[in-house]
Image (tube, rainbow, N blue to C red; front, top):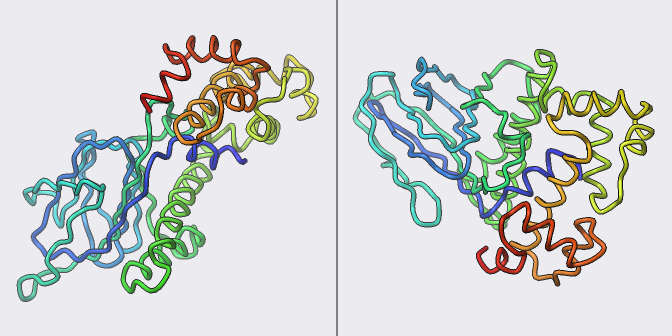
Length: 304
């Protein structure tokens, strides 16, 4: 698995939701704090994002995309001073559909919005380093794959056809990956540390892929360094500086994260979970798991 896909898979807990709606001025929505992540795309017209950090309002034009990866409350409106009305999601996580008609002559804004259900109990640092919101302005010729994903999702929501119930969640997952990839590619040039820099560093990125491909292997720092063409000490310094953890400390963290995901979602024996997490015995695994989570694996599975 590549690191980005693995990080999202480790945090995903449920089915994503989305809607394609028309808003008629004046309109203003206050989105509450949420455990997951959300996005907004302006397909037509304009809107204003009222950031979660009480910062200056951000004007959104046609094609602009905003990702709120931390589930923080925020506002969206036709103008910065329009009063906001609380938006309350349905029990399944979907959002209510507004009226399809407005006052005569009212300005229209066509929005594509969605939400993802993510667990923050073991949030991958690759996502935690994201800012309160990510704004990706539309520019001619920029981010063609992201734009293609937006267009496909918008078309499926506008005209559902046989297979849409399966296509829409898959497109939502694809869109999230494109959003994150686009931001990290954009930020890479301006960052010397952090995950955007780590994924752009050939040696560190190769080591991370190896750890994610085979977390159960008894890796050593020497092996990882040799894999990347670096000796032990320079590789360890480089990895630790960019990732924020030493190579084997990150491996242990990722093994325990993988174990938690298996216990939550897979009906496999504890022996198998231990083996996939790099432990030769259930006893050693249970001891390490309790040290990390504060409870035994069986207790964690029952609670999940």
